[in-house]
Image 1 (tube, rainbow, N blue to C red):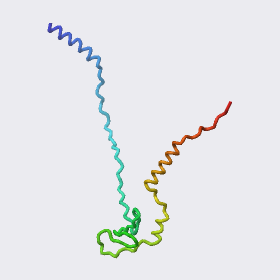
Image 2: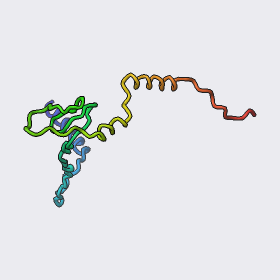
Image 3: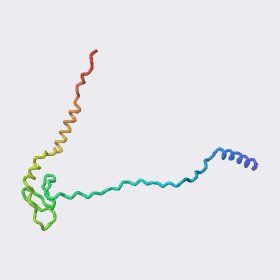
Image 4: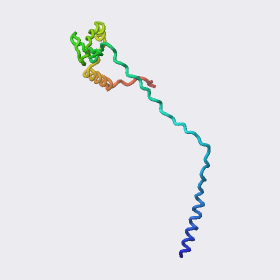
Length: 133
């Protein structure tokens, strides 16, 4: 009985081993160098220095040394630097800002957006193209 089982197992595994027909391992060829693609280097550019002199920030004239121009007076805001306060901004500089158009307020922008939406939703007449043949 044992002999027949063993013979049966050998008989079944032999055809299975022949059917697999695996490919031989490839022969090692000449070594090739892998070229690694490197990421481009990040270039850091220095930050732009603050402009010397007066600039308008949210409607307030501010000097780079830490002074503000409020109601015709130069007021120190930053730490004391033991320097003379700068001269106030020139009249040309003050008047140049007045000529620029104001940015619309939030309420004006919302009203304009609502008006545009209403215009877009208004039904339009059908196009009158075509013939009456």
